[in-house]
Length: 561
Figure (cartoon, rainbow, N blue to C red):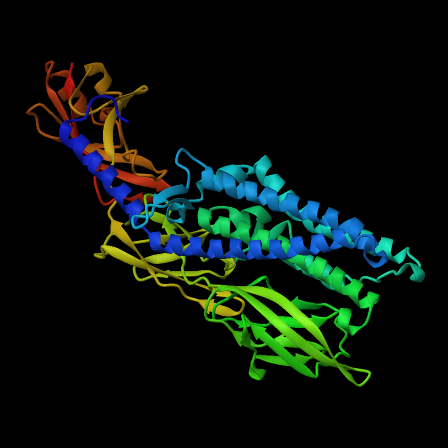
């Protein structure tokens, strides 16, 4: 801020600017952020369902550990639980940190006005910034220790899981046939783990450039989008854990007895599906032997019979072919009937899967002030939760949009008469194009810079008295108000000087000493004479490029002391 006191009118103007910007920030995209919060809650609900199923499986292994068929698996599955829980809890700690970060926690206490009951929810409507996660994971030089830890644990988890599977296989293979070895086949699980936790040091973004893994996935994204990504990782942990446990139990049942001891497995390409998306889940038997062929399928989804048009028989599987219009947990129950030794035998089916809403909202926020300014390049943070960032396409009805690193950038010409601009986003998810509704932003001209006379490290402006000796060598400088959140360098290129009642004179550059007649006027004036600096011309420097501002810097008056 410049030295000296501002008059009351200027203080009032600055206060109005601050209140106006605060009101804008409070009203942008609340409905959008709330919708994204619902998606995150749906993911967390699916995690609870998988966790409940996994706990039942662990209990079964503990209860049957004295059974020779279960002996090897019962010695390894507790270690699986430790590895899975440890990584799951670590991710939970990151989420808890983000939700509780700052002076004001994102947890909101509320009271039901109808019943008076009180509860606490997460206020997703204000999670439109990336600062907290950026500070936790990144520095200007790269990643923080927390960021390195996050990446390292993501890499290590699939390695630990595969190592446990190898131990289980090795112990089982070391047993003699009389000791009831099971002959586990984890090839499909290995592929699943590597797919769900795929890591490459650098990722190719939409511009073809290489970005570090952590930066590509988490830098600059709104907090709610990052929370949803971490929730998806937690869902994948429980999903992989569930698949391992079910395969181990199925393999044991296969070895232990006949068809009536087999358990069914639900094979899916993802842990959750979107409303309106075709569910391609497959009900498989034991080791997925393609020689099995169901004679009769008697299945229900949440108690409603599955129609013949809603599934197909394929390579020993019953493959679902059904769409669901509502999100939720769906239970697949019933029987599959097979011919064995000319007798019809049945196998019970008791599986479940989750369906969540397909993301149809984009998170768009102007990085600076939540307003778009003419002439200046305006950074935009854009994402569609669940949609790869390299598939995003951004356009506007005014100005031009370009990609700049992790952000997009929109430029609006000063000649534009538009008071608002619509920004549209589209992306690709599972081969489908997602086009959320466009979002509107206000368009304004940048505020005029505030000018002052700089002498050494002191600034003189706003009716200040200044030594005659300072006026000549002093530098006329300008900068934007502190509320204007742009990191811009303002250069003064010229101005007019009027000393007392003498004619106004033009000065090129930023020093009064550049015009000898101005110095003469100052020298020959008495104490108390007003020196008016007006018509201050400036340019703004951004990334090595000069931008000519539409507004001149504010004029000011000094008095010779």
